[in-house]
Length: 417
Image 1: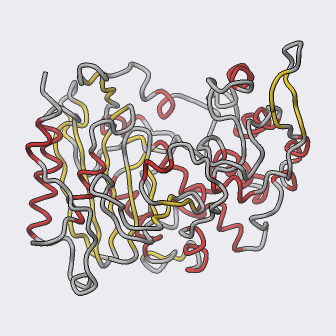
Image 2: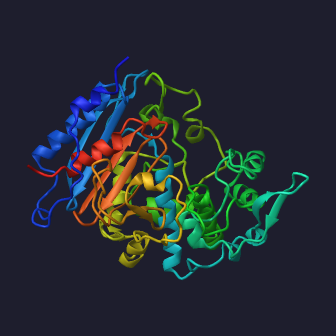
Image 3: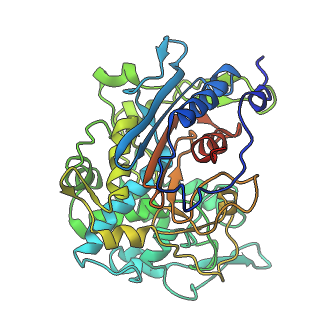
């Protein structure tokens, strides 16, 4: 077995410092940085921490870095390449958020509108607060209605795990995200479940973005997948970002590798591609898309360019800035694992860096950047301060237990000597 600890001998330790004002005008990605990123990513493959990894960085609207290491599919001998197709999981969420905000620009809704204004089944939501002497759930009316803003910043109160007390067993029985459900059926099932906290009182990652996708359908009158193609994927020429991968392209799909927590060994699951290759009804807003690294970079560059790419405008600059602004007030103190992302708040389907790293233990980055990642350890970020956009593709589960994200970020931002 290859030892993951070997990585520590092959990559640097980040200082966690940000570029100074004097060097911020200079490119971060020079020949030294390229060599540093190469060594960093290659080290994870050599150590057996990942099967394959690729990264693409644009700086000042020009490609500054691309490379790929290792294998996308070891069993078939498929190397990790530029046209490798990966499952992006929760990197679907920002795409959904952009789709929703195109409708916001048209004046079709306000962020503080109640969700029930557009999905009437949410009008009778209750919050589970405990059980009575007979073991029955105690349900109370929410202190205020769930709003669209709650959906966009993950403060909705929707049940997000079968393991939750009180509401978890009900979620498991309802099985809203069964691939056989349509998006409408899935969202209706969520609306029949009790919330596990009052809207606006906690940050808790979960199915909120799936409800956003249904809002897109309700407001636009189009199927969500069709709306994405017509208003985002098509105009941006993201022809390989999709839910269903046609048979002709499946030989480019990367395998999803699961890391054993005890041994570090990587293995595969037989059904890993089923959702994207078999007929399914569901088109989630929170996960499910596949993409190539160049395709997703087009989406990221559009956001970096404040809503426009190659003469095609998807969003207005003010809308992008709104999405990249922290919407979590300080009184929302319960934030689950969000603090593990560093000194961040949360905007509209993005984490937003509000302060520089407090220590070397945090990943490097710049205040004002907005970003997200996916369950198979993919990630991307947009750094307006340095005019830089980065996308990292890998297929590793559970989510980044090997420190890949921090190492890559530190390799990009490490200050020059």
